[in-house]
Structure formats: C-alpha cells, structure tokens
Length: 315
Image (cartoon, rainbow, N blue to C red; front, side, top):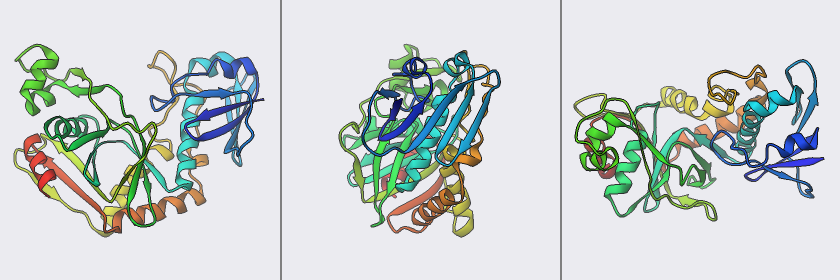
C-alpha cells in the first residue's frame, strides 16, 4: 500500500506499487507535484485503486475511485493527475477554499484579482501593475486559491507563484513598449505570438497571505477604446461569480489528455462525482459571502491597459 500526497491532501493508493512510483514527481496539471509516500499515520482524505483490466473505466464510490485499464494508459495520460486535482478541489470546498482561473497582485492589505478568458489581458494587467509600482507585488499568474474567512476577509493559500509569465505579443506591444522591446528584441508589432518573461512573486511556500479586502475585476483589455466599468447585482452577479467558482470543481475545464497533448484519454471523468449536494452547499455559502461581503468588490471592466490601471489604483 502506498499514499499519494498532493499539497496537504493524502490519498490512500491500492494497486501495483511500481505503477504509482512511476508517478512520483509528475505535475498535477501544472499546479503542483505528486509525492508518493511509503507510510502515513494521519488522516486519509480519499482512496484510489488501480486494477489492471482490458476495459478502460472509472468507477466512483463514497470518497473512493477505482481506475480500471492498462498501465500504459494510466502512465501515458493525465487521468490520475486530473482526478487528483478534482479531488483536491472537492476537499478545498470543505475548508472554504475556492480556486480561480485568474492572475493577482497584492497592494497593502488588499488582493487585486483579474479574471477572464484567454487573451483578456488578466496576466498582462497583473504584471504591469507589479512592474510599475513598488508597493504592488505579483501573487498569481493564472491560478489562485482563496480561503474565505468567517470575518469576511480572505487568505491566499496557494497560487502558481514562480511560474514563467506568458504574454500575447500584440497585447504586450500595446501595454508596454519598453518591456515588449526587451522581450522580443524588435520594435515591430508581432500579432498573436507568445512572449515569455520572468517575474518576482510573493513566495507562498511557507506562509499564506491574509488580506482584509478583495477586489475582483473581470477584465477585457483592448475590447473598447474608452473605459467601460459595470457592476452586476443580485442574481446576475451570483450567476457570473458562480460560473467562475465551478470552472474546476465540476470538471468542465479538466480533461485527461495523452502525453502528445493532442488527444483525449479514453478514461473519461464523470464530473457529477466531484460536485454532489453537500459540495453545492459549501459552494453556495462561499458564493453568498463573496457576493454580499462588505470587504469584496466585483466589477467588469473594459478598455485600454493604461486606463484600466488608473481605474484599478484609484477606485
């Protein structure tokens, strides 16, 4: 018997020991590494069993998952990593922790979070603020875990700190010409290419980051020439924030793929297991705190990067 450790979660593993040992050190969807332990004497969060079989199937039980299939399928795809990640999200909900597909910075006692889809400018905005202002520090590039405290404050418990920053070239060109020139070695605008850079993050490896205020901006950089800011209230606000909170826990954006990163694994994930009635109750409690809490501010903002920067720092 072995034990899988991911962050502060422990999973009991039953199956071929050499199979699970081959997973040691593998990335869990770019969010952390798998550790395999020979012994564990504390609490167990979940159990996973692997059974060698001709069929490929995932079976779900109460806090237990059984993987049936061939070893090469398990080792050549991200099925185990995907399941570990979703179990981790399920566990986090029980501790009032939500995961956001977002970038973030910290300024004084407040965390400023930028959310949005690919190309919305969320990473660029966070990087811009951190590079231009000494009192602003980068917290997250693309992923952040936020614990909602009972006193209506929040604590950043984890993020993808230390990861390499990736920009879309034309966004960076319009945002900061000096930085664009430094990273691309050209003054000409290159459209829609990826540009990589490094940055200093707040180190969350030893300490969490408690914040009295949380500002969440659903950003759309370059979507309009003039700055546009809007608020949503009541049900509209809840629906939009709910969409953000369930991105990971319902498995909508977590799909197991093969190592070629082009084909989907034929061991499919049933997201209903990871989001049952009790999980919904945890989530709705957090949703209410975020949408009505006096220390939370949520806005939708569109415009040019410099205008968004001025608004965010002055609002």
